[in-house]
Length: 303
Image (cartoon, rainbow, N blue to C red; front, side):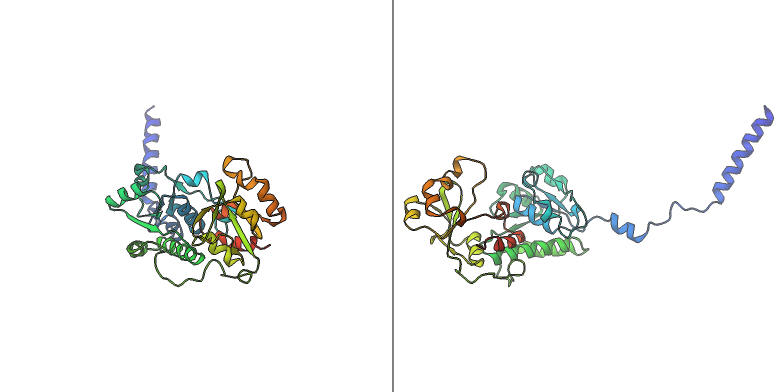
């Protein structure tokens, strides 16, 4: 027994001596590349509305830098668009539930929101000292390009050490509210001469049409159409007037399923006034929020 105990003590002594003599490898610094991967983004950006969600999802190069609103779960940007030129196949963005508590829990440095959305929440966030950047509602294709370019610039700055300073510089005025020179959507190509396709009726739910001074008007005129409606904004349509003077084509935003809001588009008088082959179909989701995905509509609007 006494001999065995002495051997046990001796073995412990040898192990301790070997440990003291071994080089201290645990304290070695991680490679620079690994440190860069683990580094947090310079600033974090939270969105408060769907259109801001889509712009951030489209342009973000790192999902960790943005937090999207709960609307992004109900109406996400299609993966085929969201994932283009991205290093990940299925982006996994953080989301908040739209409450003050959850927005703050994400510790955002900047909050981005459309000018007509989340009034109370954004005012409360401003009162707590957060920077809230408001994006102006685009009325033209060039306005869309301006908003998109500013959001892209914000995200690029967010990924750099100087991001906080750049975010402060954007706080002075709403994004899209200046007279900045833009080149329009995508390559800004006009694929048809102005008005060469004739008059196009933009038919929305509940028998309303879309007139001038709207993003839809700017897009269809860029695509070579004349807006059938001569007034500004949304206009209640008259079936008798359409039957007496029908447009050359109709673009309907009616959903595929039947609903009371879409009964006007199914009216026999309208079907007789404009034959089926003159009803244009486009990707309905591309009209929901202004953004670079609208560029494809110019080609889809060709007869």
